[in-house]
Image (tube, rainbow, N blue to C red; front, side, top):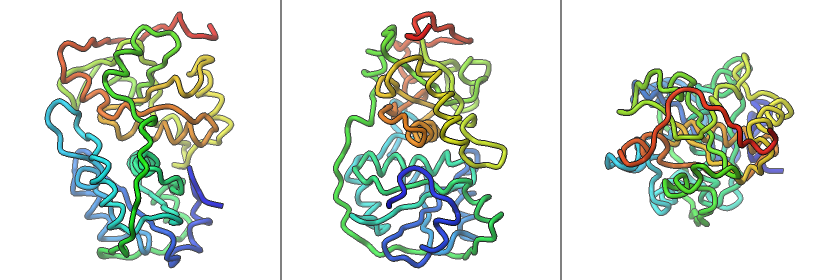
Length: 291
């Protein structure tokens, strides 16, 4: 059976030399963009390729489309082809930050119609703790034809978010840290605050002390409370630039709550237009459907 949300170290180990498996190292540091690639070259899961968040999984920012805009589908498809991803290939992505960067690759592949992709639960920490082998240097994939089948229903745009404002049937989920959601501080973007009406669900709440995803039942319980009786398809998830929001989407999918959309431009796109409303502080949600 293919792995489509999470995969354990034990399930990955037998497939390190499997030609129908592609492993991708997604380690990245927003404050030090070269750090992930450096650490990859020093030691990585054998056979893993490296995905740079800004070069491989983001398009060029214009100042109005967010800090990490999604690349055009044809560009993403070309990258996946170069990495050797194609029909029948199982992809495993990992990082060292709770899956927050690996989930971006997970989401991008699903957006282009490739379902057989999973995030290594616990990432590099779990791999090392289990005594998994490592290798240094750069690795290259064997090119394959990647045929994209773009699933537009997974992506929300600013216009969709505007339409959701004030709509009790819709739910906006902000994946950033509480202090950024409230607008107490904003280290990355020019405006502090959140999209009016958004609920705060920091992606870190999905991760246990061991660095792995919390049990699906616990996630489901918390996320169902957040949804407040709504269908997951009513939710639009965002963060600062459309990256860590994917970790919340992964948690929702893993807990059986599939169907939410990613606002790709996220807060960095939203706040670039002064005509769009901004809220600060905590919000009460009297219109929650289960209230």
